[in-house]
Image (cartoon, rainbow, N blue to C red; front, top):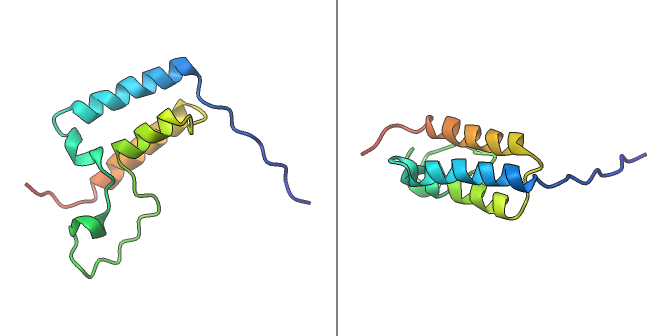
Amino acid sequence: MPKPKVKKSAVRPSNKMECWVILKRFMVGRDGRTFNKTLDPKKLGIFGNNCECVLLKPIGFEDIESKLHKFMYSGPDEFANDMRFLFSYGFMYPQWD
């Protein structure tokens, strides 16, 4: 018997505002421009043409902002997980100028 789908409740407006403020601080920060667009190693050509990297969830600040505006997060924990994922993925890149 299939499980009934549980409808996620949207993040509360006060939590959404707090998440949005945190996101904007990162976006306008010194190194924020690096993460504003979706990070995709194949598009950026960082690892060359023979890149076999598979990113399950390419993400950037714009994607996170879009999810906030569309109330796609059920709580601040999901927002925090996306932010952590973005930064941990960003640290896998080699440094460039």
